[in-house]
Image (tube, rainbow, N blue to C red; front, side):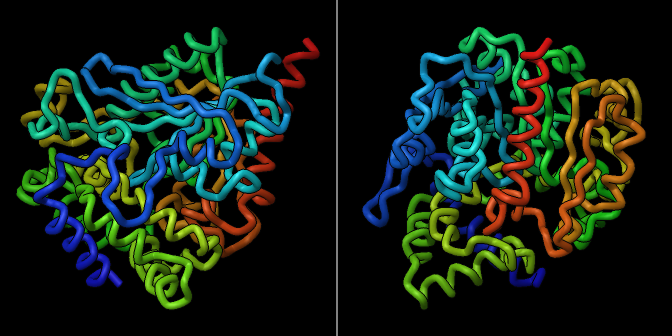
Length: 410
């Protein structure tokens, strides 16, 4: 499996090299029409807004909003705010692809929430910087630390300013969980701006991960050295307009082509594809992988090697310069005072049950530790499983609504 996965990664990298800095999600070439998140939302009859906000270090982040539900016609009513954040290699599209009945963003909107979808620096919707040219290697000099320490606070402040609300609900998947724990521990003042935090498949401690690519590359990229030095500070799996359109056009719903697309899905996601709504694969191929910095992947591999949740390891010399210590400091999770809800699956190779079991004793305000009863539930099932609404979304939305109901009683 690893050699085939590596081959796919190599093909993406080589074919994408020549055009890696030119991708624009609003420009398509004549294969299949590609929709932005806003266009996906509007295609289902919901109102959509596009917003952008600049971080202190110049990254321009794109957010999408479903301000109200056309089914409820509640545009003039008070609507609590929810902010939803994607995982590694992903973007805001991932919370929309399951359609208006089963995708979390629509489920929240239909429950009366003002829904905001974020995009981290470097993905296809947030690939601009007012201070650094995208061709400069320092454009990609970030990991999920910067996403948690800078991007999330910037987007949260923007959302709260626009909505004139003091706080919001947060939902993150995968890296969206990791970056939340960074923010809530590294910038603990933001805990008071979080009503509830629902963290789906949270990779925090990773010493017991069984993710094959992490385990097999740990000796090369898991500690500072030649391997990580050669890989860091660059785009990983660069977007290429022609290859991306070729893949999503080929991944049609015709029986032969869908079978081909399923094969690509297995190579990308592994055997966990069993629960996925496989008819979504053509849409998933349109914008995924959405682009990340290589440092984000290296940081996860470092977490596996160190068996700790800590800042990026640049090596002892640079660590002394950045952290005033030879080893990177650990994030203090006891500072995460937000009301936290954790959800995990038993077949998730990235967010392992043994690693997640370390979190409850560190989190002072843990409201829920939910193990999905289905033993086959994997990492991407939290987004794309056929039964995701019944198994995950309804639970998450209900807890958010219960919080609002209790608050209104006071």
